[in-house]
Amino acid sequence: MIQVTRWKIAAVVLATLFGILFTLPNFLTQAQRDAMPGFLPHKTLNLGLDLRGGSRLLYEVDTPTLIKARLTALQEDIASNLARENIVAGDPVVIGNSVRVQITDPKQVDAANTALAHLAQPNAGGTIAPFSITRDAQNGIVFTMSDQAGKAEAARAVAQTIEVLRRRIDKAGTKEISIVRQGSDRIVIEAPGESDPVQLQRMVGQTAKLTFQMVDETGDIEQAKAGHVPPGDLLLPSEDKYMGPYGLVRRRVSVSGEDLTYAGQGFDNNNQPAISFRLNGKGADNFRDVTTHNVGKRFAIILDGKIISAPNILGPIPGGQGQITGNFTADSAAELANLLQSGALPAPLKVLQQETVGPDLGADAIKAGAISLAIGAVAIFIFIMLAYGLFGVFAVIALIVNMLMMLAIMSTTQSTMTLPGVAGFILTLAVAVDANVLIYERMRDEARSGHPAMAAADHGFRRALVSIVDANVTTVIAALIMMTMGAGPVKGFAYTLFYGVLTSVFTAVLVTQLLIGWWFRVARPKQLPI
Image 1 (cartoon, rainbow, N blue to C red):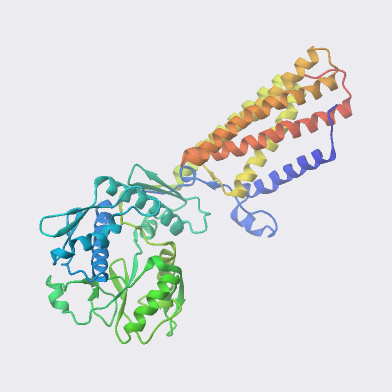
Image 2: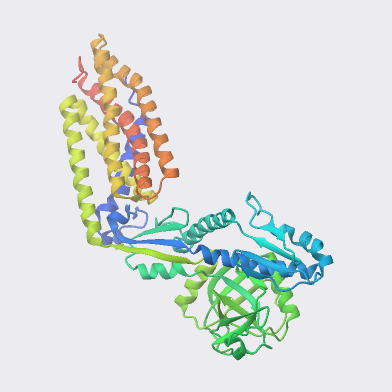
């Protein structure tokens, strides 16, 4: 006998109320949603780029610049390691994809090779050595980056860039912005609802590489501008009003932005917008040591190769906290703080393609999707009612509850609805009908075997359940694979399919069973109406 228990009634009623309440905001205007009490749900479906409109950008990681930066960093590492071991050598020089250093004393070549060997070892967790080390006949040690190592550096930079961009433009994780790799060194960004690609480009394109370096106050700026930059120095443009348009800074980085643990918009002593920052333990130690040994000297704060501030060190600064001041507005300080907090890009990005999907095109797509969904739903409803009569009506009620639950779940979780997602929505209706067909056909078989109507219905539910679960488990596995490994439209389709399978099993089994059980109690039929 079909059991109409209290927990089944409670589950169906709660599921239906959930579906109605959380789907309702999608059919209200913004003003009506704002007027609703705070305890009621306000979230609506999050529409994808193809439905809502927005911006799509295609970027390429600037691999040559990345390799150049890697070789420049190697120059500094070679010089500092040799100085630490008291090995006399010339300045390391970049030649193509190699760095060569001349050892002055031939007797120190072996010691130099030993001191520098660790620079050619793979990074932690890596398997590819970044450089190979060779000696030449003139007592030189040469580090060479292979093509394989260059590709590994580029792949690692793309992965890091994707994570940095995600933190920058979707810090809260609620905008449903799609950032995916394309090929070996390209990144595609899709931002639904973002109609200004220039604003998006400004946030994406800034490298936000922050360093703290000592100012060389003894160097001649004019000579440096003429091309005679002192060894160990860099000539950089400056925004510091006391320094002028250019400044000379030491090449050695005293503190890196990689040591930042916090960056936020604040105000300086003159109540002007500034950026407050905090460093980790390593950065705080370096900051304290530098400020302790350079009291009275200027400390340049450099962002993306430009000096934004060069204050005098008045005394040791312990604790690893400070402020970056400059010509900031409240908005620019907040934007820069967000960029610093999310981290620097490992390499510059080049825009290859930019396109904007207008809201009119999105509106047409929504209209087409709604029409296709309505046609599909009506066709399914007509078929199931013609095929199974009264029980078909029960199946239609279950399908309506199923649709409400799906819309409610997608609104609550803010999963992105795309055109492929609409297709997944229609497919899940077919999956739900398939479960009802299995149940009803099993009931027919039981009735033909001579079982009374009540027993035939009960056995039909019990014996069809195994097939329903088996069929839907395989669909769930496929949806999970697409959710994990897919991107963009594939992911949108997978999310809709996954939610739809779960709700369809619930409604096909519980809702239909409850309605049929109630009908048996009221009508007490002698035979099935199918």
